[in-house]
Length: 413
Image 1 (cartoon, rainbow, N blue to C red):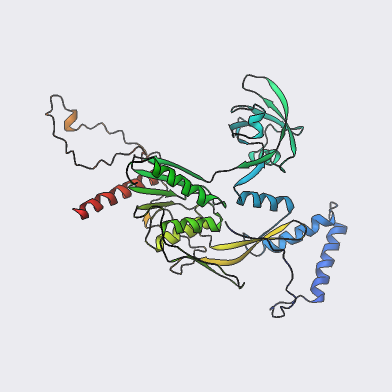
Image 2: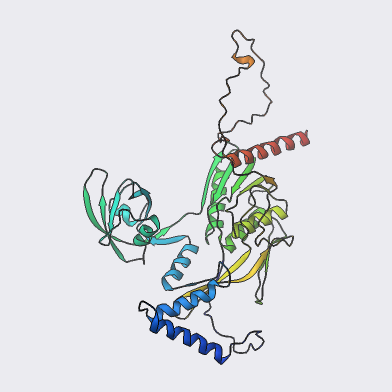
């Protein structure tokens, strides 16, 4: 999802008389009649506030799959998510044997301060037994406003059971993960786009560069399963790999359409880049992949992407709630609309399961009393710490980068 964060309250444009479908007094009366009929005759009593919220949700849900109404709590959660944080107790949980198990405890969070550790089982949240509950319900129970308290009962790994009161606080959520691969290559995974994603990526690139004696021979940028998020950091990352030219532009009914161009200077000048994508690569991640593809800066490898080419503006309302409204479509530098079409990879690598081949056939070197060979010290070794069975697309990406390195050496000679 692409979010364009707008802080201005929504107000009616009283001077706009050009609408093709003005509401008549009869239309308003019909809405009031339906509202009153539901309020008076629905099988269960429903309060007016809930009915009005349902009407607003219905209005937006009929537009497209991504426009939506958010009550105040939902709106705050969305804003926190865009900032790369959420309010909670600082744990990652999983469902195991119908129990809520603490998988990981974050440094500095309320859970760590209370002595909770990985492997503890949460059996109750605010007096409610949660055994057999689904993961999403458990997450919602543990999250809440920063500064609020939550009472939980925990069964520790040693069998002891204890009750503890935790004070929720903001927990930072990283969006970029990296590691060196096969000594000369860098792997950078972006799981979603928050306002800090571009800074996170640049910091990790610089860290990897500073801990090397020679330049990286290639980089894998992994956008698989990245659903999108805030647009601006995706644009900043594209800018980091480009020297000039258009990155993305939008077209819609509103006058304030977006257009971003790259500035001179790159983070990894002349370093080959492969971008991994799949069918769950969406929105802002498609903007990034499309920009790098159109400029020939990166080779896009994997599956055709999801195809979400619309921009959602987040507009806050006077009562603290907000709406997420689709306001435009975005286009790649060459003018391609990604909406429902997606980004087509340069190298198609379908999602397959690779089975290791247990080949028993012998080579010359397996034969008894074989003559020793004279290995070519200048030969290129394509062996990798990433196996095709573990991550086939990543394995193919490294082959492409290593092949590019060999071709570059041949051209120089």
